[in-house]
Amino acid sequence: MKSHTEYRTFNTDKQQEIIHITPWVEDEVSKSGIQEGFCLVSAMHITASVFVNDNESGLHQDILDWLDGDLAPWQAHPARGDDYLHNRTGEDNGAAHLRNLTVGHEVIIPVTGGELDLGPWQRVFYGEWDGRRPKRIVLKIMGE
Image (cartoon, rainbow, N blue to C red; front, side):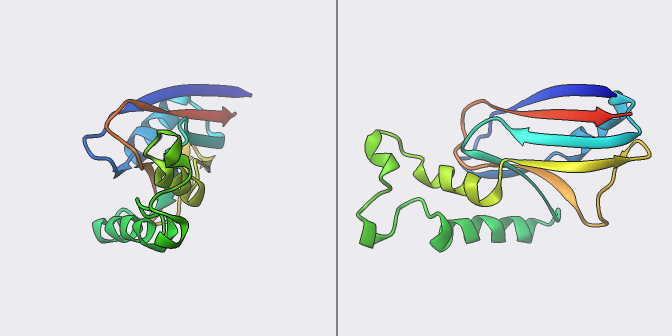
């Protein structure tokens, strides 16, 4: 069995951003020479995510709006006080931690015939929930 590992660092200008990374992942699958196996893409930070979905800007805004609604708004619900308990430790990113838990931090994609085996509309994305500083993702491809 062969393996191929690559890292990529993101430093976004925005606090929240959804970045299409499928072309990079496809390029790494090609470089790996692996024909049959799996590709793991994982955020190495607890305030970021990696996910598979449609590459459509309206959907991306829907995702951000959904997270900022009742799921993980930047300010906690008034019934709990004026902020997340995590933020009372001196941090200010409690919502970003919850967004990581909600969206997930990694995906595993089959590799078939030397290519990502995605559905017709599926693409791979990096979700930044607390940006403006360097964060890494790891890509590991394993197979034959």
